[in-house]
Image 1 (cartoon, rainbow, N blue to C red):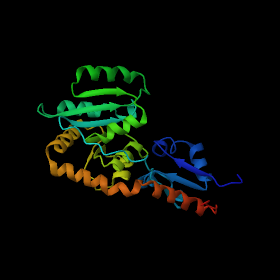
Image 2: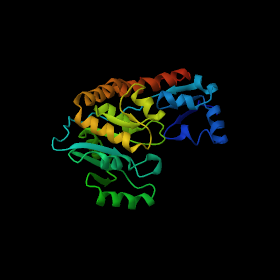
Image 3: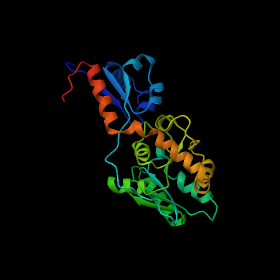
Length: 253
């Protein structure tokens, strides 16, 4: 082509389809620059592509007014569509293991991308008093739910770099996340809120500890606040400017 080509690798592209697609790898090799959403994604790319690859964290929308989580419940939100890859009911399962005296409530917002999971969501709504599936919410309502929660649970099995984790960091909402590269790349290697993928018991233990151990909850909060500078809009804008300048393109003022 007569103009530079930039290929953005988002979602789960970098962790599954790209590696197994000859066409996808050929496209990546032809691109002048590649963009990934978090640094651990580099490990999934051939070494030959590393010099042309840039990490650009996704910034988030304008800040919301301060939201205080409710005092009468320990609110956890799950923001993600119903897909097996998202392991969408892990928080609901963990809620069943938390002691009866807990004030835990799980609010799950997300549409149905895999129809067989719809009935599972309805059954969980009926049978689990600590879980409420809200269906798909407008983006702003989903952000408000996140901002008013004590925790976000993000239990994906594979992830390129979830925007909802970036949103939680920007809002200062602690995260309990599956220990996968897509989450670790956003939250940091030493973040204390990880659990092994699909490990319901480990997640339940973290939830109970976050609810009852104020020092641990503060450590989670401190961990997400430490990552906030990565997700500032000005930082993302500068990263894109640097990328374009590296291609010899003029940047308008």
